[in-house]
Image 1 (spheres, rainbow, N blue to C red):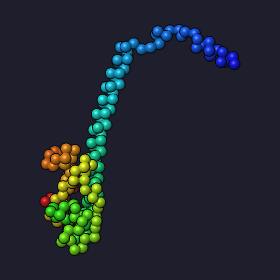
Image 2: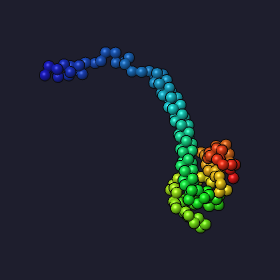
Image 3: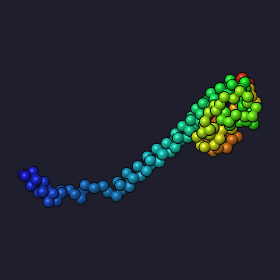
Image 4: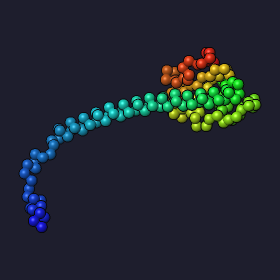
Length: 155
């Protein structure tokens, strides 16, 4: 009871130094500007990391496709041709007599940006290409797998 009475008295008394307890307008502007600068820096770095993560995800996806292509080659004695494309790992080509697929899932034929991988092969070696972040094949941000094709030059 005594505690309640003392709390009521404290609340009724004016606070000492209340005019000096807040921050000035200049201080608030400085704090907001610093927070804005920090947020801009963090967002810019986060976006860059997301693009790098998508590039890494693309390379990993291409590695998974390579394993599927290797199994296709074991069953069919060659890789799918450029004309057959990666779709030959999902649907049997007309000339594939020993096809035992599907060798992968259709959602694995796209890069993280939603574009289809480009595939080139002469039956002996293959190359998988992603257009990268801009989705355009033939410029500097392309991702090519493998970097150096095993068993010869790329088609």
